[in-house]
Every structure is written in structure tokens, then in C-alpha cells.
Image (tube, rainbow, N blue to C red):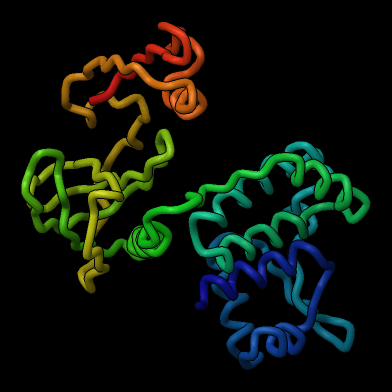
Length: 269
């Protein structure tokens, strides 16, 4: 894709003084004419690209535009890599891997080992041990629709309702308490709605594009998109389930009721 090539050219120019159009053309398997068109595109985007004539000439970027490689600390870049690594477990690894390499390329070589060590200290894995095999393909499909501003269609199994066919303009993917949600404009309801991914089936990207509407990023406090009453549920559970319940309601939500039996309280909608 052209946008990927433009980003890659930009990263290469940021990491070297200058490079020839022939080298870029060989790397991206295009003509030098295409490379010069890409350079013009970068220039129109406000990036100060310079072309140097002569045998030792080439293409470069004004030094003032380049990011100081000392701008980020090792800890800051480690945090970026941890977050991107977690994202790669939910979305296309190839896509995120490219971003990871670009972030790493902005670092001084002497910091690389320190950063790798720090980044490996925390692992975020968004994949379930077992369960819905459709989840990752659906996430990737929704991401594609978001990138291309294309409508999506799917069957939705609403809580306590019959399945309904929906066409939605996607605007946001939300991960909340281990569950993925899609926030978008529902053409049937003529309003923004939140859809739980595990209730979605037959999800397809349509050829129809849409003009993005103004919207506020959905806050993850439940206000305005969880419109049902919150109810408290008290359960008596065997000690063998204590660890599982701790993950749901925390230490404060579990009390010993009798030998091997615990009382737990959950708040659900």
C-alpha cells in the first residue's frame, strides 16, 4: 500500500543523512519515478524533504525536523513496546510488528539491550486460553473497517431480545473487563450504540463508505452505554472457586461464611 511505503520511506529518511532514489526503488520494488512522486507527496504533507544533486547526492530530511534519539528514555520506550506487544496478540501481528520496528529504529543502539530487557519484564497477552475463535478475525475486520471508513453488517443477539440485522458505522473498539465492544453509529437505531463482540455473528465489511460523524470518545465508566439497572448478586461458592471469584470481585467482595464456603457479592447489569 502507498501509505505503508510512505511511512517506511519517512522512517528511513529520519534514520540516515541521505539515501539515493535508486536504493529506495530497489528496496520497495518500484521505479525511481515512483519514489520521486512519493517524495513530492511527503513534501506536500509538510515534511521538509531535500534532494541533493550529484554523485554523492540523494534524498534527505532537514536535520531540524528529525527527532532526537535521546528524546525518549529507555523506560518510556519499554512502555511503548509493552503496549504494542499486547496489541499484537489481538490484532494483526504483521501490522503491529512494523510499528514495533519503527519505534526501535528511533533508539540509539547502546540503549537497545536495556530496552529489550525492560520490555520483556511485562507481558500483556489479550488472547483467551480457550474460547471464541472468531474474536481475532472479527477484531482485525473491524480495524480494517475503521481504517477505511466502511460500513459493517452483522447479526446481533441483544440481551433478552431476538437477533437483529444491523448496519453500523464503526468508530471505536473498547476492551473492558476482558470483553471487547464495538462503539458505532447504528443505521437502524439512528444513534450511537455499543455492541458486545461475543454477541455479534456473521460480521462483514460492506463496500459502502461513510463520512465520519463528530463523536466523543466513549468513556469506559458505563454511563450512557450501559442503560440497564445494576443489580447485586450474592453467591455461596466452594473454596475451590475462590481464586476465580477473586478475579471477578476482588478480595473485599469475598467473606468466609463457613468451613470451605465463601459468600461473594457481584454487581452486574
